[in-house]
Image (cartoon, rainbow, N blue to C red; front, side, top):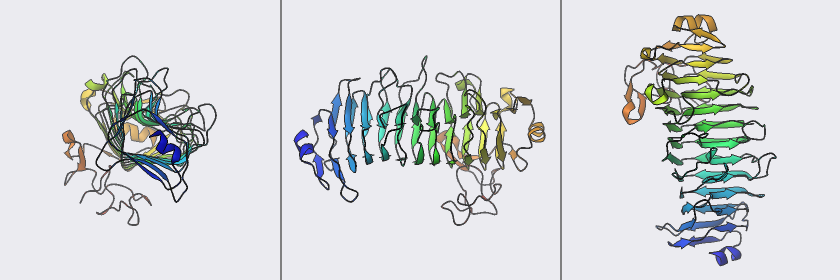
Length: 418
């Protein structure tokens, strides 16, 4: 392996046969038309391993590089893209057994600085299976963008937690650092889509930091403590659309929330056509809430919430400074909780909430009928409340969009019926 890497030139493809290999570094760059490819031999799965908590399994400090098809076991980091690297693809790997220390060490990390921005850019992470199975947990993100320069694509990964969390800060499936700096988060021009996230001990997908021109869509988040975080978004726009978040579980916070905000952010954020469903209060210590200000300072402003289904055990909102309309809302009466605590005012009925806030003038109150929520199928059943009740939004549900509505108006939630 070491000799092959030392001889690599732009356009070379290194096929690795099944077997056990030590960690390695990729330091030879390809070109835009001729990537350096390090790939499993077809039909085989080579294994790169190290003692848990020890070093980086695959370090990439070159550009125009593709790494594909490995089993990455142990170490402190699985794959770390650092230095001046850009245009890197990490795909179709099985990554598990990484052991963090001092909140450092994750399966996939993009960028290698914190307080200052690094030049790492245009990294694609796709089709990987990532298992969080080794303590201590990192308390950050399993797919971590760290002070990098944007342009990333993170999609079709399967990320599953095998530990429940506990007395330390939880860990997200996907997110970025630093949270509270404009150069943090994904920074800019990044797509996060069609990922499956199960059991995140903190947020499913974290969108904290600068975040200019970010799109987050068609992800499935199940069993997380919190679905999304926008705590804060400095720049925007951020578009969060056609995701499904369901069956939240408390892992360390003491309650659950669909969307967390705070830290006085003012970047524009748009939640369109998401299905939010968390009706088990017991799994969330009595509080499975909707939009919540769990961050410090003021609520995130400039947030638009339209065409969503928001069905929760307890209050819809524990925040403020949002604009919400054309959503289908419901709070389980068994919770005996208020409908919302909005801008510091408690609202104990749907009518009082609408009158007092001016929100949801075209919104609905009631339960949708899903095809099979127990099986994770959140398409609306025929005749369900929410069909043909949305607002037309250019680029998101109009006839020219990838998701054109089929009836007299768009359906609410993540899926168009019919």
